[in-house]
Length: 610
Image (cartoon, rainbow, N blue to C red; front, side, top):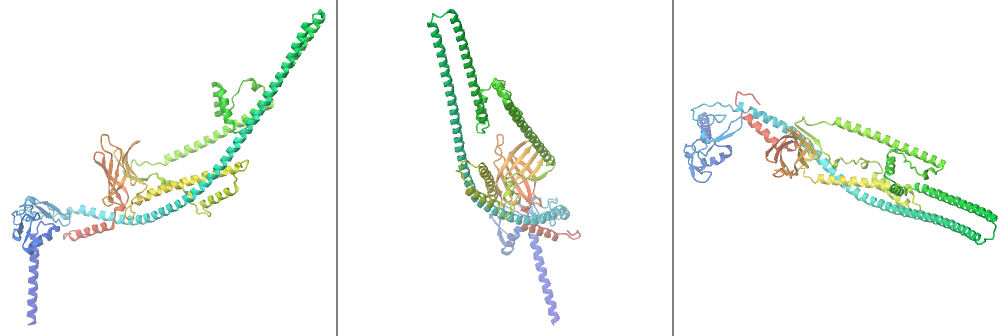
């Protein structure tokens, strides 16, 4: 009895299973040509018996589905036949890429689907070639997955490095701002002390000039007074001579012999007086020249008056003499003045001039030799740089780092020594403020130079800090993506050569087109677009009779950053493709892996495994 019951139960289970399988087969046949995303829509037809056309114009029943008669104008009721001209037939193409074709191609005797599903009426037998046809696509998919695997690993590393670098940049910016505030105060203190010293130096210089002026005026007054006395003596002598001559004319009773003797004697006296007068004048003139020469000699050794005297001398020189003077400054030789004044100098003075001349000439020779050696070193360095420079013309794509404010040399301010460079400056300024007295007379030259040097050094460091602050502020103000994944692109350019042009794409800066020595700007950096999948460059150089140039860069996942392609689809509007690990996301990698697994499930029997 129990055996009979078990047999009946088994038969009932088999019968139900066959009904379910038959129903599934029938449903599958009824949904022939229906895309997977539309299956839910047609299942309502089997549950309710009727559904509306997708355009809402009519309703149709289960029996009207694929009955080879077009009831819906949009072809909703005939997805698997060629009855409706606007209908679409879906090819599953297992093992290859799915495809939608026009319904008019169904059962037309031509195999449009690689799985042959469009020719189901039996008039022609289509071989399933999807697996063989899909081999190229599967290989591409596997290669893409491998690229994503590598790119995801690189992206993780770069994101972590970017996080650390951004934190470091922010900390450096904060530190530099604090140092800038402190250093500004120190520079201002040094500037104030330097200006006080310069005022004292100026006051001392003016006082010295005034003393020199008074001294010169006194010498001129003494000389003038001496000349006046000599003139008075000369006039008195002339008056005496005139009186004597007058007395002689008034005494006619004298003898001819006496007159002759007296006349002769008077003539001799006049001659002697005239001779003495001339000698005295020559002596005075010689003393004046000697005094003037000593004054000029002292004046020439005064460094504050050299330039002024040189300017006055040049004005009084002729063009020929001026040319010789200028030439002597270049050759190190003095010009020869062929005037009487030079021949009046004594032998010792000439010897001093010759010695000074030789020393000056030797100085010029030494400087020229040093300059020559410096030029040789510069030439050698330039030549080395030229040899070390490599061209990217032969590369289809390359990258390089462009010059930016990041290259500022801050090594002298990054020392970890104790005390730090800033503390040293603070100590130095404090020492200057305590020890250097800007009001002392005369001004201590060495202390004044030390203050100037320290001011120049501190000002230079302040300028470097301010430049670095500007650079970091600009850098950190950029949008590097949600995870800072594009941070590593900052400061780099990526090139590609197309025919005679070299295209350079510099994220966060600009994009250019280079031909020889001519550079055309394709656009300045604007922003990211389409969820960080596109870079936009705008406001480039204006086209002749056209718009300003612009560039759109589409981003793709790649194991390294490079420009894969560039084109000009429309006038002055350029388009490029840039690969970067920043676009290699784990979510997309999982989608590709799932797709590959689905393809494996569709693999027909008798074919090799993937």
